[in-house]
Length: 398
Image 1 (cartoon, one colour):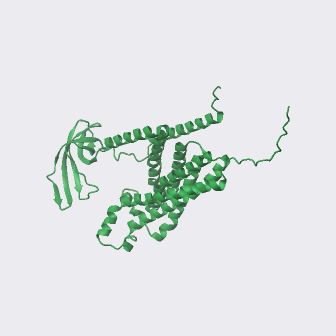
Image 2 (cartoon, helix red, strand yellow):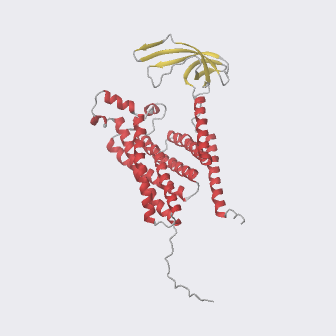
Image 3 (cartoon, rainbow, N blue to C red):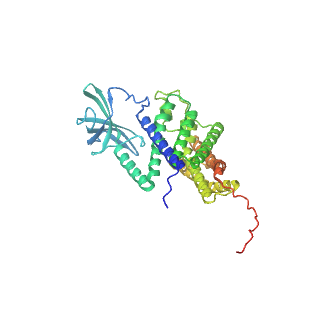
């Protein structure tokens, strides 16, 4: 028997997936090239090259118990830019804050801040450790592992990773700095991320449509709950790290509270997408194995999967948020502050609000996806025709 040719719908389905992947790749390239409007490189007389630390002088660094303050003198060789190859003496200011201070040693690579006047360097500051090379190594290893394990799907997942990073860096962050409403902007960005990522990973299919709609409904509910409950919690957006510094850096018009609220459903969006895709994929698998399944049974299967997955996902959110604030919780416990008082502290209340609202979104995304998936996948259900009793044919002997 000759092989049957590939059907036209199959070819169309493949071409649509390729077109979608190519379109998102093209948009990602454009986003990478488009400036944010904040690249001003501070001033024309400021350069930020990397440099190699040749020697250090710790004479002016003083230790006061746990606190180290003073000034470290650093002799460096500049590695790039118009001053490449030039050796200069730089200063590393140590202000007594462990999260901000850094101490250089010979052989380290540093990011420099050079103030120049024409061809002369007026001052040099060793700003921080140069980490881009280590980041690139880690990124390459991640790419190799992802593509090696998942192949073409891994490549598309990698594209979705870049798509998300670019939308946040080139769309969300500069948009909020320009004064756009953080909640409206974040909803638009997250919606674009959800649609792009689900269709990239699952292709143009019912599975992707169900996953996207379920996640979008969950995000919308999360946003509504955040707006409803932030008032009674009396939480101010200044709980965000560096938020107050941002106000004093030339952006006093920013609404920190709305930025904080937008961050609630942005933080939960990844888990919501994951859960909705799990349920949608499970429902598609069920209907492929049992194409005559009833609509009610299909929705019930989606809910059953959702109940199991939700249990671990809610804990995942709690662990993710708690891990970032473990030192703060240790501080309060170490000081003997009662638990009832701890939950009312501003920073803790902000994390409780973020965790609980995100968990509400996770719990509700399961029934959203199951119900939406039931009606969308229902078109693939093949109802068997009722058996018609027919009389047996007469047997005629020759």
